[in-house]
Length: 103
Image (cartoon, rainbow, N blue to C red; front, side):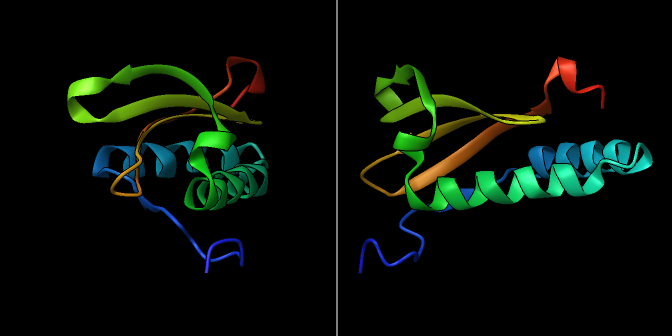
């Protein structure tokens, strides 16, 4: 049932995004900030599962693909993602650190 905390969207992390996130975590852990990155990644993942449209700032639409592209900061991370509303899918396009994060 919607609203009970169960995921409403399936979040897809392409292999390149997964590798980039692992690398990013490694750099953060080397600077003693691994837990900070993990916490931000968990927040991002959970919010994308529950309500990706309300979570991010809309950027543009890819009408032919039926995708809306969003961006959101959860410090120290910045995530770019696309939502396919009718299929309840979220495609994470990129995760990076904020330039000011120093990671």
